[in-house]
Length: 396
Image 1 (cartoon, rainbow, N blue to C red):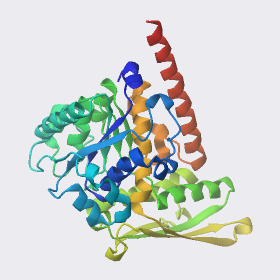
Image 2: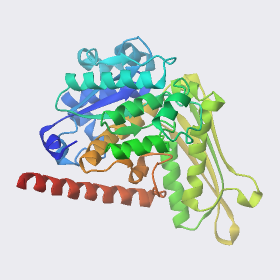
Image 3: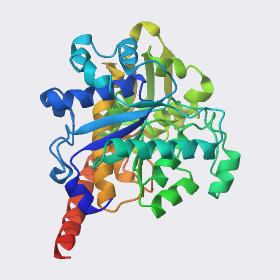
Image 4: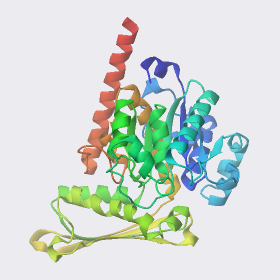
């Protein structure tokens, strides 16, 4: 994206993989509401008053893909995340949102990429003068190792799309010059993809959006470390009844999510919890509990030691709304990615670790303090680079 494009464009186009899921459909309602009732959404954004050169945050449009033929309005109602009073006033606009069928799971990766690139081009034609960002909201998939793929040809031949559905969207976005937000726990930042993104000037952020329990876990662990309070054990339980919770009952699909939730503390604290017992004492459990729907509940029990090694503990109970917590972060990340591309950044963006359980890139910030500091530094870097490019463009 050229800096001239940034100054001319006044809106974002979010291309959402998984647009009819709980988070995707809630995101679409939020985008529609922002245009007529910005006061209902903008106060929840961190970037609402940032990046004045990007254009108003409320000028955001949504398109995307999904595997289901049911309408977006049907999906919104079925998920039950938002009461009708919040989405019904926007139903005419929501009914016009373009959501295309995802590529068939049994097609080859190269065929998927070609179809998705064509879709991206069509979306752009329907929304000219917008800055596109891919938002990956696909379900957690089974973990697998594609790091041994050293070329696109090898990736095309060895990656089976049914097991790695994110790859088609990721490659199509990179080849189309579209920055990527990977909000899922699925690993897409394999070396061959990172190399393509860097060469084509496409920034990638991810992985696994940090919305509720893990966000507070980072805050608490950072605070305990700052006071030199030794964490002896940490038990976390999540119950949720949405499709994400149901999907995570598959042990293979839950493996990466649980790993992201578990290992996050070791880096913050500087030691493995439970090392003095010879086994890990940081436990994370996720249970599908249909009555909760999207209203996730999480419990944490933190055992720690203070002066003279005396035991103390913290009990934390979070009653959150999974998609309601996620959507403002997605909107913030979309704005960040458009600005980062305009500032000339490409490849993984580790400074955005604040938003993710498993941030990608070299040396991402781990503690809450460092993550907030890095965000501030990144904002200043972008402002300075874009100002310099604007000045250079004006002189030319």
